[in-house]
Image (cartoon, rainbow, N blue to C red; front, side, top):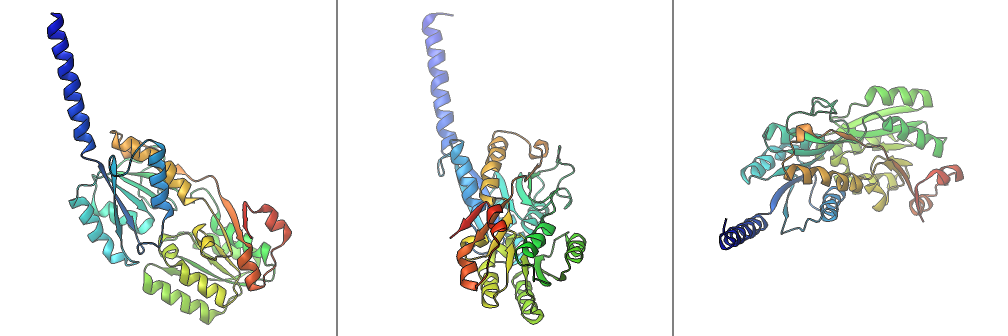
Length: 322
């Protein structure tokens, strides 16, 4: 090949490449994000994903657009939201929670779904942990752990006089048998209450008021997180010692929380989003399992309620808010 022809060929390739890159830059990936609650009631999932993508060099607006959708605690809105995102041809769906993940799977079998639920395998969202199959992967937040029992144990160790506990959980929870067994071994009378929408939360809060327990446990679930201000207000008003299954409760005045960091979880899952956008199939990305859990105590809330937290519990805490 003559030198001039070679230069022309290379120059043409560079120009074509530049045009291609500019074309890619003009079409950022669209990431659908669905939250069961109202806008502003959750930030850890969204912010963790954004931070994780920034860590990988992504620039929002240039490389990706977050299509945020909120169901305002109404489960029946989820199908319409998923259909809207499918119509937009989003590149993938970010799906925190059982209800959202179920709706996303019912709405599409082709768009990749990156999800967090208590147990993706037990919920039958994936075929196996190593090879999920289908269009779903992500992280199981409580698989292989005994968190429901741990919440009760922490409550009893911190407040030995607790004998009756209301446990507020998601309607999809699979922990009932385990929780009952743990409550019996701890000498606790347990009332297990579930909710799948705002009305369900209202009924559960009224039942707690009527039951008049001397302890409260709140499971980790997007619906309950979305309604956390009301739950925390009930606990504060009745001076109920409470353990929450999500760290976000603490910032709003919750007493004690034990769980994994949702922010860090989704920051980590940004790597899966990156791989999927580059061509990886979600069904071939192994489901991860949360392994790091934190105990956080809001000493300010404890003092306001007149609670004394044993020194041994404070020493065990990963973080104490003064």
